[in-house]
Amino acid sequence: MAFIGNGPYALVTERGGGMFLVNSTSGAKSAVSGVPTPVVAGQGGLGDIVMAPDTDTSDNRFPIYLSWVEGGNGNTSGAVVARGIFSFDQSKGDGGAISNLSIIWRQDPKVTGTGHFSHRVAIAPDGQHIFISSGERQKGAPAQDMSVNLGKIIRLNLDGSIPADNPFVAQGGITAQIWSYGHRNVLGLAFDDQGRLWASEMGAKGGDEVNLIQRGDNYGWPRASNGSNYDDSDIPDHRAGDGYIAPAAWWNPSISPAGLVYYNSNLFPQWRGSLFSGALSGQALVRLKIEGNALVKADQWPMARIREVEVGPDGALWLLEDANNGRLLKLTPAT
Image (cartoon, rainbow, N blue to C red; front, side):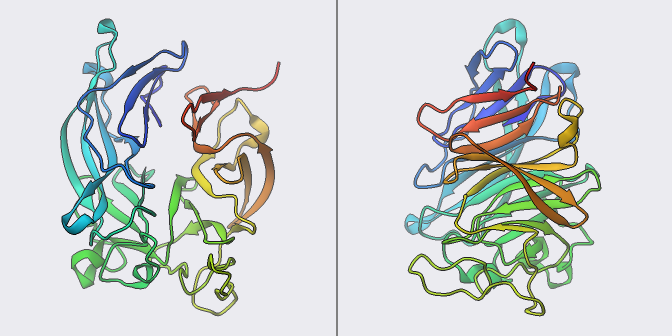
């Protein structure tokens, strides 16, 4: 979900390939045309949408970034991120259209299976870089393999080229894309008001995490986790001196964090400086208070399976339920 500028409209994607323009005042929604056809299987489908930082509302044409899953040879698949244009004319009353899509990044290699694509996107506060989460596709080992971009967080220039100051740029090739590694399935990316990047990540059986992402660091998967494998075999816990970055917050049992947003608006002044995450298996909205480089688990409100959390232009919190008849919810202070 992404709001279009400071107006009432938002774009909402669905895994099955639908995209809608939603009027956040009236609740009306209209289908968007020109959406690419994704591979829809397991966790794969249409993914994230964010507005490009050079958005110009003067002609109702809005640069966007969009992610989805595409197929490959031999029943393989992988996520992609593309840059394009969303355009709409309010007077026509339709949902507008996507055009000029150009893929700027692909998961490499494409592999079999239908899980852990991640493909979440965030624009850095400097307006010059795009960050992409790339899941390890339930394969484990690729998260530590620097010759592939699975199990990584990627940093690119807005046009998809490699920034000259990336930590592994001297190694060239795919490795030059990598900002951090040792990730399992990052389903939330959010920058705070200090420009720091936070990421919510699903563990295996326990070990769900929120991490403070720093340049060139290794976050341990699958060599370190505060959870266990699904067959109950042990994974070494994070510990001081193991060479891996320990999470700022973690859960055991799992809550399945999905979607992440930093809150710094005035509508809920008591929550300024907090992160909000949805919880899928945990069926909740979770608030984490930032204290330096640490996170404090502040609140957990039982709800439904929450896939996405966003902050609206007026400071309201918006939640997308993960369900066949999922709702878009708006949270404002009680009166």
